[in-house]
Length: 98
Image (spheres, rainbow, N blue to C red):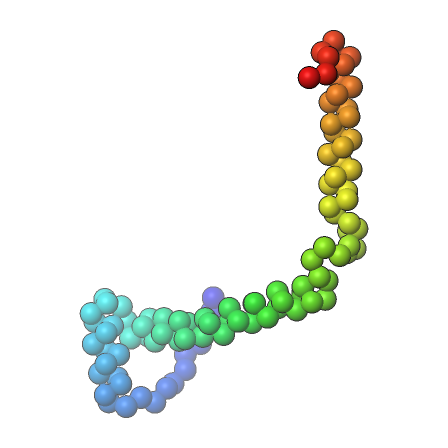
C-alpha cells in the first residue's frame, strides 16, 4: 500500500510519550502512530462491515429464494437423486437392501 506523508502538530508532552513507547517497543515513531491510528479506526471499519451484512440480509432475508433459486430444495432433490442412483447401482451389483 502506498503511503503519503502528512504533517501533524503534537504537544511536547505527547511527542515525548510517543517516543518513549516507540523506543520501548523497538519501532519508529511513524510505525507507532500508524498502529495507533489503525487500532482506533478498526472498530468503525468493523461496524461498517457489520452494517453491510445486515443490509444484505434485509434486502434478501435468509431462507428466501434468490436469483439462484431455492437452494435447500435443490440440495434435497440432488441428495434424493444420488441416493436413488446408488440404490440402483447396488441392486444391479447384486446387493440387497439393508
